[in-house]
Image (cartoon, rainbow, N blue to C red):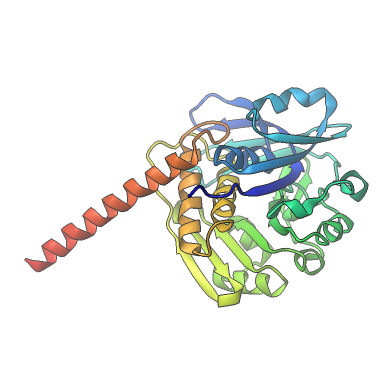
Length: 317
């Protein structure tokens, strides 16, 4: 029986990105969570609507989206600009620079949209001014589940350097969240000197039902509040790393797709992790299909089963 098509929306600034990777040619690309997460959702077969802020003169950036992507531009005077710099072989380490642009999503720009038709609504914030509390409160009135990519709420741009700072009014914002995603650096900035498990529990007490901390090559941690349960998700190692930009956004896309279909958190997390791994293996946006993610997972599990069988055989002798 064919699975029903999942329906997800994502809001955020589309950026003009300069990506510089250790010992590789730099390139210019569309960027932001709306690009990387939105493209992954589309390629995975999700019915995806992508709301972007952008300057009309930079609409050429939207040509990098798939033809199946449903774009809803909200025009602003300027387009956000980011630099993603990977000066080391270890792509878990990134330096970001940006041009400060004030492009908030306003209630008047969204009030004609029926967000009830979406199972999830992702807030792909890149800086703390993207989603005013008034806008969050408005979106929370719909039955859709709000997902916070928390990075933007922590970011401050000072002299073009992107810094992580305290999430101001986090209690007022996160009371409306169903899910919060952060990487390990963001988690440490969000709640300094706190274990990842305690960060998850304390964040969940503010409102969210699910909290995810991604840790790059060290895997990820998912916390489900209603069961008070943690799920440790492995990272799927690849020797063919080309570009880590957007890996966390791809993780979120894979995770939400599976969560529209299953309550199996481990399964959803592993699908998300493999989606991120396939993104690591190419420059630019995700370009694989759901079937390809599932095939790689199947191969990985078969190889793991063979390894375990060999270990058991050795133990017998």
